[in-house]
Image (cartoon, rainbow, N blue to C red; front, side, top):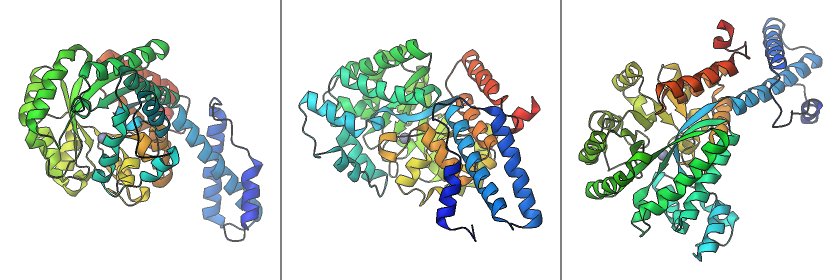
Length: 411
Ligand SMILES: [Zn+2]
């Protein structure tokens, strides 16, 4: 900003107050502002930036455009396909549940819990994650945790969510699976009745435990077959390749269940191949490490195998040093079916909208990128074709109001 003092910049920012969070999108003003900033940028490229007025104008336009894209992200209909319910347990709720259950936590305050969320790796997170879920004992606890996540997702204009949870993490503590599923299921039914938001349940096997334990868990899960859409694989990746669970996933597929697996988060591209070839995984959770294997990238692209990317999580767990280093945009530009997800939002600093916002800001995502990500989230969902069609129509209606997106222009 060369000639501008910080005070002048702050003054320019204050001139145009941001609209209220819940304001409806004023599409006309979005288009005008985006056109205006493009013209200003063109003028700057042609003539240079001479006058303080032009600098003011550019600064204000950038600020406005930024807030418009943020509103576009907040309002666009989207699906979330990679969310661990236990990872949505906020410290406040953790304390409330601990108190009513008489469970003692190793922390004295919410602030102390949050201070503990400084992770150096996936394992350093998992240690705290498993500790946190010890407060969950009653059906009501699982209900409240699920209801809190769904309310937050609904506020983020999530229309459809596929919910992971870890049965073994609870049954190993002596909590019956009916308690876990009962609480989760009642919360999702309430939300669906109230808002029309659809959900699916995907219990995951803990890969640091044995294949026998996973098989026993699958048999337990099959008692609730009509409530379950698929199964997944999560927890400590390195040293626990998908190959370890081939028989378990064969059995799950024979029951007609969908299959997903975490692979290529910290583990090598080979784990992604195993997830597809040995487990029959229809989506890859994370999968960001595919980039080291061009042949694999080509295969993921040709098959349009969805990747459920969780970049806030990746940065917090040091898979990437900073958001600017993340390969989400690169994967998107390569033509892979990338989706954005929050993983364990209570631990990683953001729910779905925050993940979109962080990626947009750090990687300069265009409105069309945001649209592609939202569209991919519905295309990759385990929904019946007519349900998928309904969500995609809603998305198209929303986008047709935005002529600055390529898809909007075509309409
Ligand atoms: Zn995950």
